[in-house]
Length: 370
Image 1: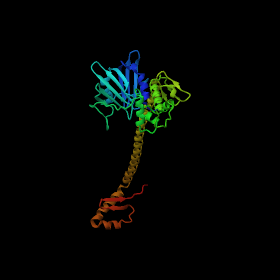
Image 2: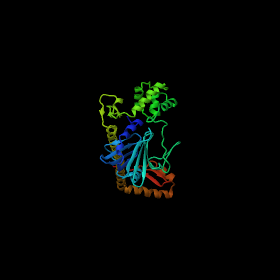
Image 3: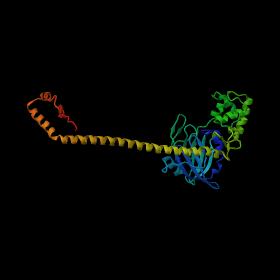
Image 4: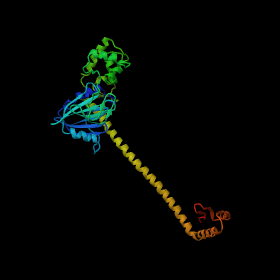
């Protein structure tokens, strides 16, 4: 496991969560595709299941900060699921799908968590009629929205109960160019596990077709892998494995459970990522405020400059009031006897009057600022 959860990873994760059955839902936190289901489990106390769709589903030791005011979907989940008890938790087939059954005295509900594609969280009635979904989806083969029955997108084969004949058929019918890609993608095992399985079965991972002997070896390895004893480790590259035989590196850290190994790597990054996101949002807000302040400072400087200029203009007009009045009075008298053209011609080289715009009734007077 590096950046997401394979079907095989989920198989081992779920195998460790049977103790949650009977636990009561205390709180539900949700923001976007991140959700924490908090349970109270007899003899185990508070337990938190973290969902980061479509990447992770695991038992967490801490939860990130969620909004104080929950969103609509979170409120919906709380309304129906708080104080219910977990009846069952399972992986659907060998898919990256988790189904959790909840029950109260009156009702039963099913939560479907999709850890494939873009991920989704869906709450259904006991008969799988969708009550609400985090994301409504209308696709060619499936529709996910309130009021319709939930349709599981299952693969044809599951390595949990696959026979040799099933495996042979899956290999023969695969359109993948190699057996390793067929295992990783068609059977949902994941790339790292698929390569190790080919190595254990002594099969060239680049082959497309297999002999009967190779099918038999591959089938034996597939059957053994889903029954391996969990010996979880985290490598020095923060790769997470349910058992040590698949790990590389020298500085590996061992864990009592696969969930605790995932928690060790994922939870701190989720919490720090949340803090970085909040810091980024805070910094953006600060940046916007700084931009507003800069704009206001420029406007203030412009206003001050305009004020000073206008103030001085007013002072010049006041200081030269008699001269300006004489000019205006003289033009009024001249206008009674002469045309604007004649007046402009006579004032062409005037020291004070520089322009006359008769259309706009404007006179431009230039006075030296002493």
